[in-house]
Image 1 (cartoon, one colour):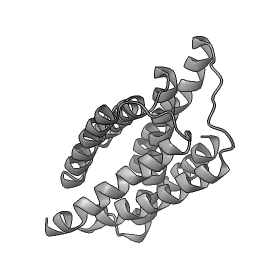
Image 2 (cartoon, one colour; image 1 turned 60 degrees about the vertical axis):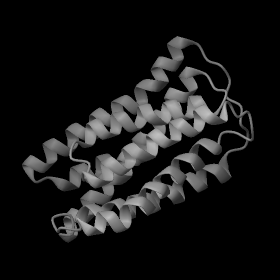
Image 3 (tube, helix red, strand yellow; image 1 turned 180 degrees about the vertical axis):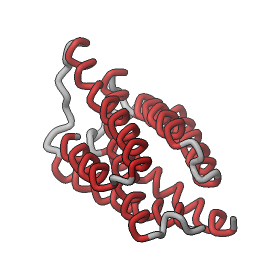
Image 4 (cartoon, rainbow, N blue to C red; image 1 turned 45 degrees about the vertical axis):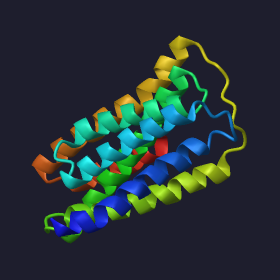
Length: 195
């Protein structure tokens, strides 16, 4: 448990930096209330520390709570619509889930996932990969405007991250039971490319 005390705070702050960089990549300004934004970030950081200390024992629940917290952080920090905040929070955490699943798969192949420090190693690797990905996104973004779309099309777009979570979660459970890990790897790579 000492390794969580040593790495917990830096990993939580690094996680918050990744989310902040992702959210900032869509805006050059337009900040909302600072006190509400700081409070939302505080709640997010406290939850991240709890998830790190508990080894994320319920990963699907942690994923859903993280998406909701980033939604609240985004809505409290910037002047954005609810649809935009929910969609961008969903995309961030679907990609993060895919990176974590791919990392866990690779660690499982090397035998590291079953070791006592497997969770920490996987967390460090997935956070480094996500940090690189959000910086690539930040450099590739050309403008900070998103045209307003109708609710019908927004729901269709928002189904992409929801379906991705469902497909990855179920594929993982099906392939682990049948020892067909190559199908899971292919599905994960395709889902990363689609999103």
